[in-house]
Each structure stands twice: as structure tokens, then as C-alpha cells.
Amino acid sequence: MSEFHSTRRDFLQATAAAAGTALVPAQVLPAGAATPQSSSGLAGGVPHYEVRLRVNGSDHHLMLDPRTTLLDALRERLRLTGPKKGCDQGQCGACTVIVDGRRVTSCLTLAVMHDGHEVTTIEGLGTPRNLHPMQTAFVKHDGYQCGFCTPGQICSAVAMLDEVKAGIPSHATVDLTRAPELTNDEMRERMSGNICRCGAYSNIHEAIAEVAGGRR
Image (cartoon, rainbow, N blue to C red; front, top):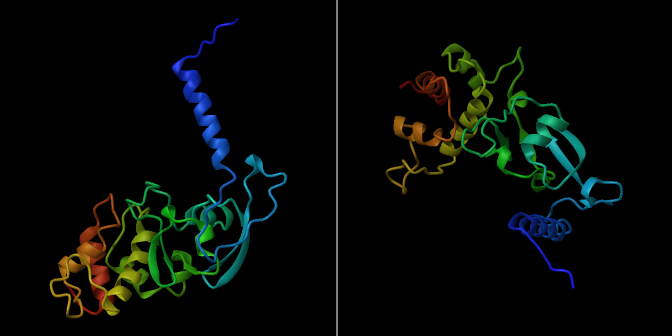
């Protein structure tokens, strides 16, 4: 009788392979998401999904791996390079876009979850000849240096002002029974998810304050 010999590495490799095989067929998607298509000829046998993304006012029908993030769909499939892949962990805010009027870190959400939703990137806020007021204010107040975080900063700022207007409180809101006011503390708290490694925060805040109708 031959003896069975197995190292710890062999065991872990076999376990990982078995787990991967078991997980591939399971496709858990939110209600209302796109339906899967045939998996024949697709790498790994993972079914792809037809997703309709309405981006910057235009409809796009894409066949996507359900694991594709909204950020990768925008950048790699639609060639919209405004949203930046910074940390890819939702911590820097460089990938921020606006979905149905709410700001979203697109690296942390799956494209299939936004089938039929309205997505706005920095490219959809304004054009070089017709800038959005927030873009104009960022230029006026030098609210950028290297510019890498700027698209996410601007998208976040635009949606943030809408949140304040809608009366949505933040952790810095003192009185939850009253409409929040855009104080320094409120602005810093609400924009804290967008990091500027160049440190242009004071200029960014000046730009936002001007668009909001006040000065710091």
C-alpha cells in the first residue's frame, strides 16, 4: 500500500481550487439587475450580464462580468477617464461619480447594480466652453494642483450641496431638527471622503463656498 504524503502547501492549494470551483456558478445580484447571458466561450464559465448604463445622458448597453466595478466599466469600456482609480478601496474619493443624484465611490460598487440608473461623471457636468459653476469656481480659486483628485472633488461637491439643500444631516450637524447650514465644520465633514494629496483644501473650500452662495 502506498503511503499518502501531503504538505501544508498542497493542502491549501487544493482547498483554494475547490473553493473557487464551488463559488463560480453562484451569481448573487440585487433585485432588478440585468439578466445573465450564455456563458459558452467565456473565460472561467462566468455568465456575463447585459447592463444598460445611462451615462451623461446617453444609453450604453454593455455585456459585463458581474464582478466588474462601475469604475472599471466607465474607464475601460466607455473610455471615460475622468473618474480616477486611486486607492481602489473607497478611501480617497478620486473615483466619485453621481448616481441618481447621489455621490458614489464607483470603485466600491458593481456596474450590474446600476442597470438603468442615471450616472454622471465629470465629463457630463460641463464642457470646456460651457463649464459647470463648480468647475468655474475650482479654476477661479485654484482648487487643484496635480489635478488627479479634481474630478472626484467636483462631483462630490456638486452632490454634497444638493444633500445640504435636501436637508440631509451629517455627523457635524448640531441640530437634527433644523435644516443643516453649510458651515466650515459641515463642509469639511461632508467633503472628508475626498482626499487631496497636494493639500489644496482651503482653495477647494473657497470654491464650494462661492457656488453655495457664501464666502468663508
